[in-house]
Amino acid sequence: MRINAFIARAGIASRRAADELIKGGKVTINGRIAQLNDQAGDNDNISVNGKKITSQRLCYVLLYKPAGYVTTLSDPEGRKKVTDLVDLPERLVPVGRLDFNTTGVLLLTNDGQLAHKLMHPSHAVDKVYEAEVKGQVTGQKLNMLSNGVKLEDGLTAPAKARKIADNKIELTIHEGRNHQVKRMLAVVDLPVVKLHRSHYASLDLDGLTPGSWRKLSASEIKNLL
Image (spheres, rainbow, N blue to C red):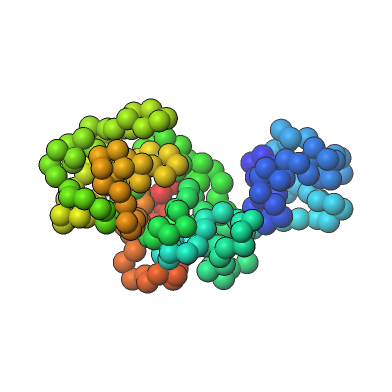
């Protein structure tokens, strides 16, 4: 793996921050100053600021994100972070984001390669959202969403749209644009009141309550990989 990924997996810093450490000459590999394109493994001797580091074991966690938490690793407003809910020694990062008051399935891991794969549009990972909206869900609006709607950053890919109740809709998308579900529903005049993600890829929330989490099983990890 690239040396910045090794540093991130060791829990020292994010990949971006690791790049800055490398550029600053603060990282050595096997006794020499590291370069950004260096590859690193467990048999290499890597130090940051003169202190030897080791990579962490890969860890995969499924969290039922409650409302009132951010999915960033730091927040200038001092709001609560989803990582505060998971009591593990590994430095985990959320795969993608959920808005502050959006609830539901959130995967956290230190497997950077898998996280990149899951978030890349080419892999078309399904994400299922349930939204309570203002306005009435009609067949015409479902068809518009199913065919894709035009946002300021372009036409969305076709989605699966299903009516749950007059003011509730289930939307399955595989893109990951910023605030995408809320923006899509706003286009068809269905402003979101509450938003919940019930599924992410093959993962759901069975057995979990808001704020609780568990490690993924070997079969779940295999499915994601």
